[in-house]
Amino acid sequence: MIPRRKIEALRKLADQLARKRVVLRQNGRAHINCKANHAAYLLEERGGGRLKPISYGENHMRPHRVMSMHAEKDALQNARKHISPKGKKSYSLLVVKVSNARKNFGLSNCCVRCQRDLLKSHIRISRVYFSTPDGVGFEKGKPGQMRIHICEMDRECGLCQNDESDLEAALAL
Image 1 (tube, rainbow, N blue to C red):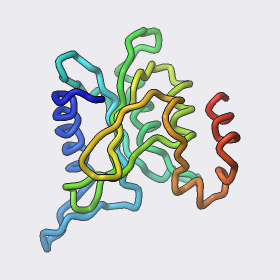
Image 2: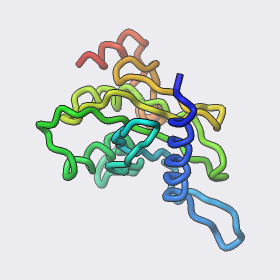
Image 3: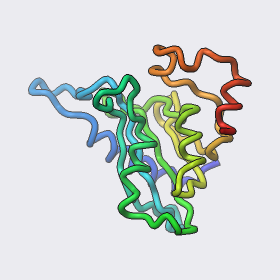
């Protein structure tokens, strides 16, 4: 259960992420510039529900690659210039799926590859907050202990056509 104060802080940050991802067309309708519509903040928790964004990441296609860069991994890579690898401090991650309407969010649970990357990262991630499919709430989980999720790109390329036991083994790598 996430405290009400923290949910309010998460909602405020999620709205900031939505504003970064969505542009208004001349006709006044909102539109996301690309197919990938996930964004993430690496957060420093400061108590009392206060959250300070350290770095920002978003889904995008990497040049000369078949796979996309996920928002979680992009936020971690962008944080390297702000965080010492020797630090023992733990951070949180907020991941949001932004809709074109900018009022609702979609399910943004971390995929298997991202959970593995969070576990292997030089930055200690203690919890991940992600938007839920109902469009208004958030859930939290620990990297490697969140429910199995296969991203659309992995489904299309056939990398994750395995059963759940194979996916759970991939997390252990």
